[in-house]
Image 1 (cartoon, rainbow, N blue to C red):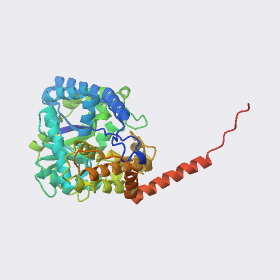
Image 2: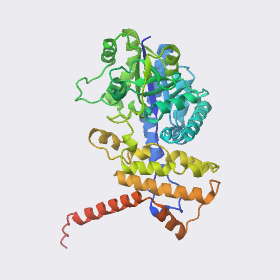
Image 3: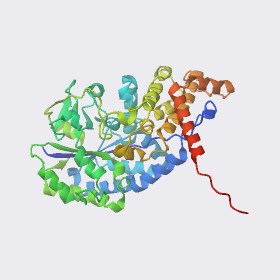
Length: 445
């Protein structure tokens, strides 16, 4: 078999509003509703709706020869339900064709698989139930947040009953091996592993509109030529990318929609490849070998590791403080607390705290609402302080926390030392900026 596995990912976080120290104990709504609404509506208009229409046209034209899979975080689904319900309806139309596979994942696009098996399983079940509710299908293939994968994560996914997982074809893991084969988990071989061909995926996702790229412009004929030039023994080309590639990251005037419109027909006519979903491939292909991944990998940045989210002290401290609350939430029944617990786990909050720079740094700036990682950290920790107080004062049961001077003092005393250090660093920077700012001459009367 020679197949192309085309898989798109949709995710948008619930971004936090500016949440100051004096809000702790007084205001328990953490989200920037204006920004969340405006971004999801913009992406829906530029990307999701026109892209869904293109895919529907392709399915009608090519029938069962054209297959696509989607992974959608619970947070993007909720925002679409609130602000752009027409997108959900368009996905339901796609689902009815039978040509679409919806993948399981973590509900809040979290990093829970790195910290808690129980929390990871809870979120996966929540997500799977949501997909079943919306599209009347139960996912059998799995895509973890940020394509996170390791031998340990794979065994947890296998224990939950999934038969195949998508991850990154990281060079430091594969070595001389190619991502263009089916692999299996090193501990539990029942779980099959599809590894992203990052070169060919990123040619579309990142380099498509780059006029300085030696291969610009990329056409369907050129891409088909690359496919034909591959070793005929290769079984599958895994093209995994953000759905926002179509229309948002690559704007419509770059020709991205025309490229996608012409790609299936060109591939089907000029190559031996067909389009298949992850579950179809799991049913038809046998692993060529196990892939050993002792340390987690991801699809982020040049290192393909965890440093985009857990690469500095700020990120690690916020992450540790977040999951230190797990015991307090064991018997939580307050729907508001559970909602906030889901939203606060979203990986984007830690991504905003990244201090990486150069090529990766430019990527980190996209959709980042904070001017610096320090402000992202302080804002998040203020929210987390209020969230912790709510749990402690209500025992996880429905109720309200009343603000008093004592509450504010208690929150300050419990704030981690690194949060105070970051606040001091930020305050010093602002003071220095103010002192060194050039004086303006007064206008003559």
